[in-house]
Image (tube, rainbow over all chains, first blue to last red; front, top):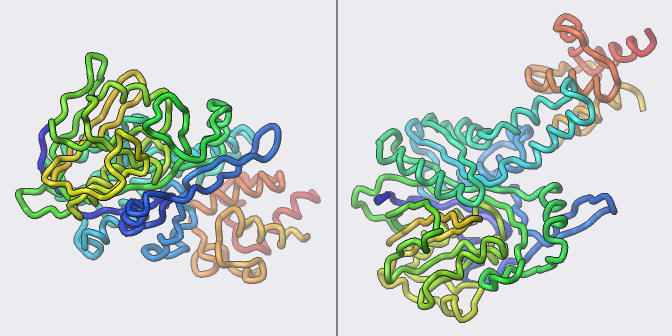
Length: 360
Length: 84
């Protein structure tokens, strides 16, 4: 799908902090401090390294009292949304034709499993109605639409590793069809006790505290959570300082890797998961590539953060040093974007891929 | 801990009433509207919480309307059922 969609604002929250400037600082520093997530196992309390997001800044936009029934997942989404609108100078604008599209790999997993636990503990009669309403998959998009008074359509897309390109296709279609004037698009995923417990079971020997995304033989994923939102509008040839989305493509690389523009810089969605990492080995040897997962962590909606980094790169007309470094990463010093396009490329399991091409 | 005190702590904890302490909630203060400001979804949540924490079922709207006026009426309802 060939497009001309402008990125008009960015709103991000994650282990690196809150807001566009926090992400830019992490990009310049080339690192994000990794926190610790605590959880229970049958053997007792345990901890895993994790990139955790703080949603306290949401109180700048919404009264605390209004947030009491809104869970962590929705708070991250709402914070990302408000920040993107603020970045675009749209906080006070009419939002009657604003759509909301959210991509998520896991959804509101904490709330969903709390709701299920309440059924296991007390039967369906004692299940929490609040947890039920927040476990409905579109809850974060609905909360965002209600509080933002965005009366366009709202949608949540979950396709695990491919959630971001899949949801972005829907957002771009809405704009192309002129169904809406703008779309608040974002990816959000959260950490939680269940996720950490599963990680410990599935990757019992993986103890990495640093993601090594280009070391494809090694399981080095570190769980991350956060939200990366963008305000998207039809470009119509207008100036787009944060860049334009020119192509969104989904497919399967069974017959080979997708065709890429010769001079493109690849932002790989490799995030330390060995099973997905294998697919990146087939990329051309001379490809100029970078990975930024060590700044935001391993999470299904990582490509939304890569898209935010691509937008920042367009804004500053330079490529940020890739924290992964290595012979296949771009240099450790910033280098000029020099008119090249950026392709955010994510491989899932079984060769599925999603590609988002951005140009200044 | 009295039933009233236990109810106040349950309300604060389970309904996420941040910035409020048990001492801030008056026994006779209306739970809904101008009082504590709870709403209809809180009412449904409260019915579940009373059953979960006290093992007492609020069976219908008539019963609920009378019991859910304030901490004092709810505590009286619970204590009355316990001794019945």
